[in-house]
Length: 473
Image (cartoon, rainbow, N blue to C red; front, top):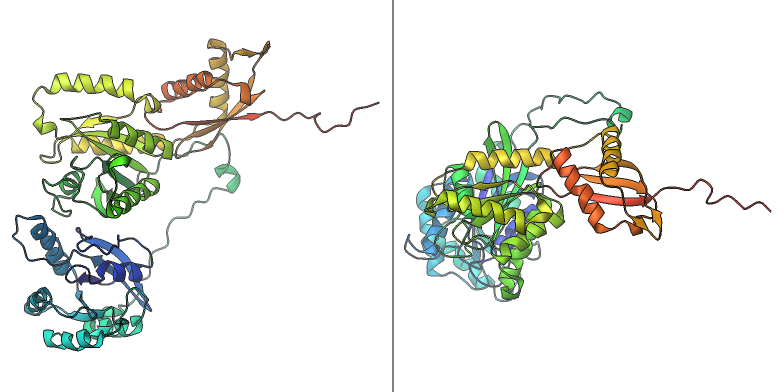
């Protein structure tokens, strides 16, 4: 990306719709309710032959700096400062308002390039609002329809004219050739090959939890700046916002998500959209940090979130936030450890870290736990080790007999990682009880040091070489 563009305007003029149009995906939440967007959201935009970074922002609302609307506007101001160019969006259908005039004056004083965009110009009677936009003193407005994609060529030309050809189309830099893996396909597909963990690959981490658990505060502490909107109000975050930063030389991409309440309590359409966006973040992440409020931990919703992450097959880590508000830390730590083992048997051995997003306590330990869990989640075990282990497990605890015949587990191999998945060839797989599968799962966790990650074991009937052979008369 060669330049950055911020989209600004008052609420409900179509900023998020234009953002989605430019990035080519429905990333930002869109609703008829004013003020849906609260944080600033970046995205990779494409407009004809232009490639740039676009930032969606909250709408301008006149309010004090201590209020939620005031803090939202501070985020918008930060986006304007960061951007090389601002798209000032007005509603041509509704016409200008005092908020539009206030924002126009502020943009003129800053002296940065501005493109005035008259959205909803396809509507009947929008000509009056289009011509009124000339009074803002920001040049000729570009008439577009973000909903229907009209006027995008004119918008492209206006951006190029505002920035200049050299800034809009910088010379391409030849990237150096990357190292090519010279190993053959046979070696990569060998069952006995155990690849080393790649600690240079970027890691995607989703932060989830109940409302007001401190997720956005935690990410701000990691970044060392007030990148995300925070406050005492519950449910501030609506969109899932991604931010990137480096931890000990490794790129970490974190997703801040909306707080998820019990399903029965989620009634409003906007909250349903926010929860659906959070669920998408879980599916696209590699590691998921479930943030608990240490002052009221292990609510039913907390347990359901951990179970959801385990069923999705993600690498889960628990973070007991607000540790700075705990008085007797040793007693609470022992109680949390006991409850974790008792209430979360499906992720036995899950890493749990006490932290404070407000003070920064325990954040390095949390990041190390994320890396260690990701190593386990990516781990592969050779087939030779697995079959030797399977034989010893059957000696210690033989499979049960069903209908007078003993079940036989013949062969085991790992078929996938992320999360680790294993296939066992056996007789009558439908008859193997769940208790024996749990026994094997717990044995894998203990003997191969795989705590806290979901483990999948699939049973398959061994092939009978005489099954298709015709009977001799």
